[in-house]
Image 1 (cartoon, rainbow over the protein chains, first blue to last red):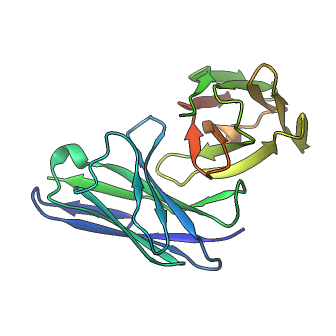
Image 2 (image 1 turned 90 degrees about the horizontal axis):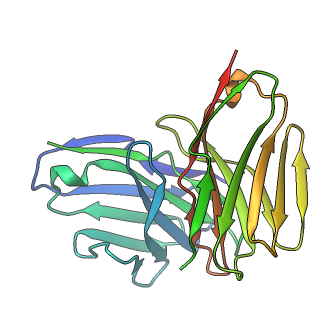
Image 3 (image 1 turned 90 degrees about the vertical axis):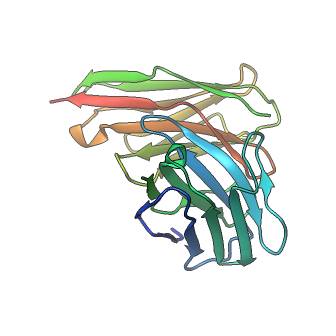
Length: 115
Length: 111
């Protein structure tokens, strides 16, 4: 299957700083990428849909100024958590799809800890 | 938006027995239903998926059934093995690619 690479896998940052997470589709062009947040023992909650070359679409309740998403190319989407606070600590995971309603390929996920 | 409910939240089975997880969805426009297996701290892995034009699909020990009228679909794992222990998520998607996930089922296979 297609590969989505997400980095970093773990990051610890100080409260008030910003953290950038990268999601790359290595062997396919993902016109659409999705960013999820997952709390321990919980489901994946969609944060935003990222389309190449256009502004991301955020789900209700997700602060777009806090979670900046950029999808500058067909193989790279980034999520920047700005002015991170301890409550932003979570597992963030991206996914990309090849075609409509086909398998979503997930990145490895990023464990963010804000101290 | 789409709402996916998943039951049970936890499931413990004896090795060799079958495991069944059920999901319901709210939007009749949903037409793609994947199942994911996630181990602790890892990415979700697709184990099987089904589209709305099919009622049943099987891949070795794993099968999925879909009832469009009732808007529910189920995952069946037969001859369970310890390595089947994980969290399983169902999901539903419409034409906009977005996956709505169920809450997850923690499956424990007892040796």
